[in-house]
Image: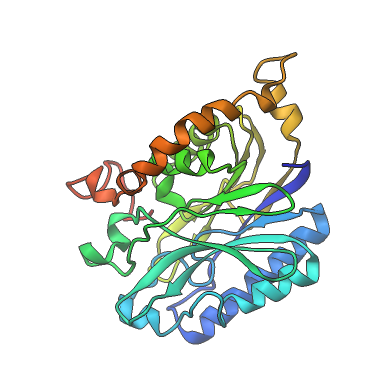
Length: 309
């Protein structure tokens, strides 16, 4: 991973019920904020919140939502691909993704390269109870981990509630991830948000760029923002407030990892551990990336607010 500037943009869905028009308005708003952020910060990686094209709770079931979103790549992601190409940046966004049939919608993170191509798609493996189609929600869980090679470094993705499950992050780390994007629409508490971003960064010695939504989604749930950028030693180097805007920071892996043990060559010190553990984690990957219900069999963690992720 080379030094570069990263940014987490937080924005609110457009007000009102979700419609085909509001999806287009959300896309226009998100791409406009992306341009403003890139022009102001010079960021080469920009992360947008979970489901920024719709808002987290769409106020409808899977079949109706399916008709409003698209495949990836597709009409929903093409404006973001054009924006990334125009700006020459890497862009990670959260969106609902159309599955193979009207009952299948994925909560996905999409990583787009500076040429506008899709570098990777991650489908949320731990949907929060309220969104899980198996519990009356609207999203189907994914089952694959995604780590993409970029000219910035190796980038992984996790979405919101995935932050509660360190195994997912460990699999990405042993596959070489140096930075993990975390698009989110989290409302349990600001303490849990910061705790999980910092813990996962330190667990795996990776950068975490967490973009959390603000404002109200179509179902009226409110989000608090506080987007974070965290170094591999759990230092918060950028933090946004609770309104629309961004957090940005210059990331230098030599400086960050060097502070773990001053004077040592720490950036090269964990390669043998990753190699030793890779076979073990790959062998058990299907168990580690398990549905959230295995961790919370009675329906989600205590302290959930308004059923948000």
